[in-house]
Amino acid sequence: MENGARFSDVPVAYEGLSEIVWRVQQGIPPLTEAEFVELGTWFAANEDRLAGLADSASLLDIGRGRKTCYCYSVAALRRGPRAEDVGESAEDIRQLRSRYADHPS
Image 1 (cartoon, helix red, strand yellow):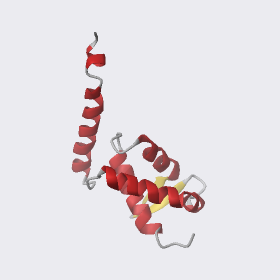
Image 2 (image 1 turned 180 degrees about the vertical axis):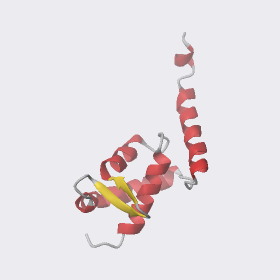
Image 3 (image 1 turned 30 degrees about the vertical axis):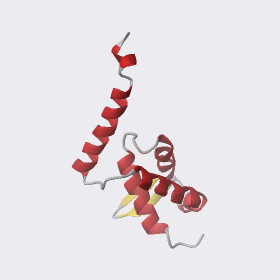
Image 4 (image 1 turned 90 degrees about the vertical axis):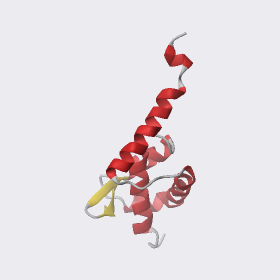
């Protein structure tokens, strides 16, 4: 039996730990699975509005001179709370929620 088959959870666990270390190095706040679900719920409830606010390149302004791709946020939410780069995507969605929460629907 190949080691990959015997220890199939190891790469997934390693990816999750690597993501946590990367977030710490980049100064991105921690992300719980509960907050990930909350961010996903907010994004889904505002998805049509956000798509309408995005520019012609599907970019949304998240402040401080940064933009995020609307489609990238959708894909990150689909990948789940333990996927690579999800911390950065979650931070982008936090910023979107902060910036666009009070805008009329």
